[in-house]
Length: 209
Ligand code: TYD
Image (cartoon, rainbow, N blue to C red; front, top):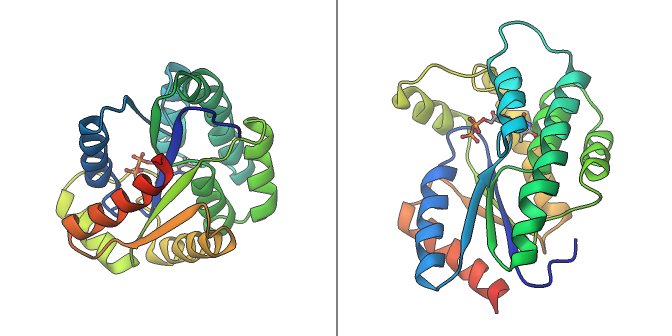
């Protein structure tokens, strides 16, 4: 995607990888640098997206894999067109929790769909939009599970999946990062919050220049 002024950063990782903490730290730092930050997420970065989020995360009952993939892609199409592109055109930094790599990892490897088909569906939905930087907070399933349990919240549909599902998601993320090393920064999410934040800031700084 052509981003003449803004910077588009997406944050990916398994459930419980600490994306929220790191996004908050990065937002504060970017604002100190005088940047306007639009923090957003998928699914649910728009009003329509909130409705879709409610279905994909909270529907009680089965959603067939292709329907699930289409719901995430529909959320994405609306979000990129109405929130992400306008912000980048204004010159803002868009800091986004999850994007198409989540679909490839969760609907592709995690479920039963072909990863390339899932990716192409998202690229069609967004007219080929790809972020400038994707931060992957890599975490093993056991640590993620411990963190989710400690959070003491009810699990959503995806969090409730077993460890083998989350292991497949993790492997898919690492393969995506290896295939596009210039777009991805992979950080070990088991490290200290400050170390992780430092690594992220360096990668962002390099792209702000
Ligand atoms: P969310 O509550 O936003 O969780 P997190 O804090 O882990 O980001 O839930 C999003 C869930 O939706 C998460 O389990 C991953 C899943 N998901 C997909 O399966 N496919 C997608 O394309 C996206 C964007 C998310």
